[in-house]
Structure formats: C-alpha cells, structure tokens
Image (cartoon, rainbow, N blue to C red; front, side):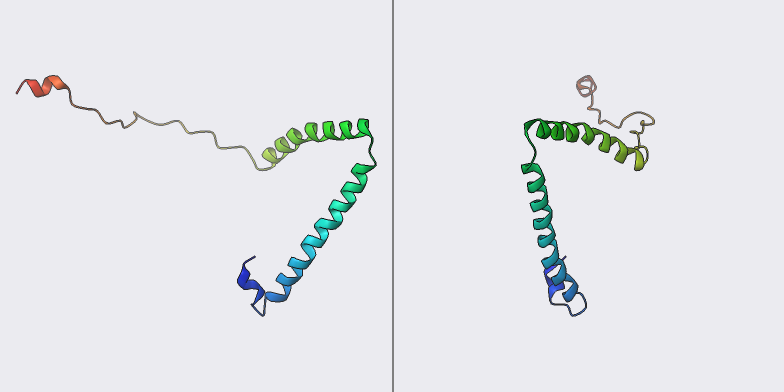
Length: 94
C-alpha cells in the first residue's frame, strides 16, 4: 500500500480500514498466543519447540514439491569463451 492510497477517494476508505484492522488482529493473535504459551509447563514448551523444529523442514519440502521441480543448471555447449593472451614467442620472432 502506498501513502497516496490514503488520499485517493476510491481506495482511501479501504486503506484506512486495513491500517486499523491489521494491527488490531496482530494484537489479538499475539495475546492469545501468549496466554497459551504462558499456561505450558517446561516439558510442554520443550515438546512444542521440538514439534516446530521437526515441522519446518517438512513444510519446506512440501513447498518445494508444490512449486514443481527446480531447473537444473544447464550444461554449457561447446568451449567457454576465455580470452587468450598472445604468446611472447610470437612477438620476439619479428
């Protein structure tokens, strides 16, 4: 969202609602999460952290599979174009 969207009559009301609702939702979700985490004992907290540590690689693999296979680096055809310096011997013959 751009700053000019606030003053545009067509997009202004929608932008103002977004600016008001998004922080409010973040506060509500954060409050609920802190309440839930506050009620956990040490073992439950450790199990929750272990769960997230194990689920992170699983989520990454699932995301990569849904996006399709990656493009493998293509092999180059032919020789690389590297500049060759002239031999010193050729310059001495003249």
